[in-house]
Image (cartoon, rainbow, N blue to C red; front, side, top):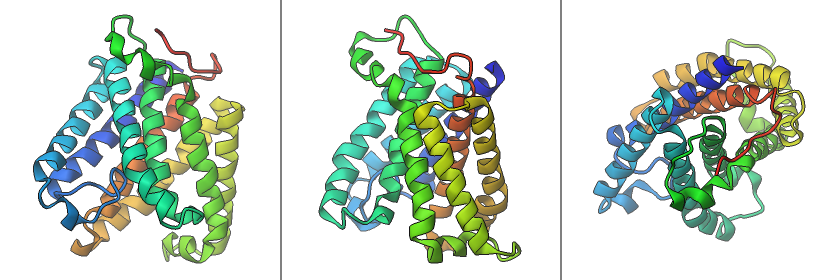
Length: 262
């Protein structure tokens, strides 16, 4: 259990640091953080870089164990603010009923939940008092992740014509794999929401995400043209972070729940 927690926070931290690092290579906000076109941030370069630096620092602190709970609470709170003041106004005014349009918002919700999962698994007794309120969100971090997985699974059935194009051409039966992985995502999401067999389901989920990382995301990122603007590499680091979150959920198998230490 302890190993899964340690590897989980390592992968989650490295994933977040990677997303932050991309903001220096592609100098505008990653779409998962803020849904604005690149030209809208031309006068915000310093803010883009500062955000990238903060994500790199937070990710590395989480990955390698320095002030883990304090860092995780700060990161989770910051990501929630990006969601509430960045994504939600955009989503609620532009095709709010279209589930596919919520992709980045749901990813950001899950990544925020990952930070709160870290805070619950690696408690500190002397974190700043102003973080007491964010600490109360800790028990709900896994639900943010579960909601994303459940809805992404539904996406596989609603948008099969698009999702099946993501299956590598060397793998036969793209429709079969689309339906199978959609069902797997829905099942994993429901399992997290009801805390059903975290050891078994969490390891299967982590394994599936690891396969996607190696078979799907890394090859697509390596082959992506310059016009992709780093979006495929963002998917690589997101998948790494989500895999870490699955392992952190495995690490709760004995306790069965997350508890805030306040």
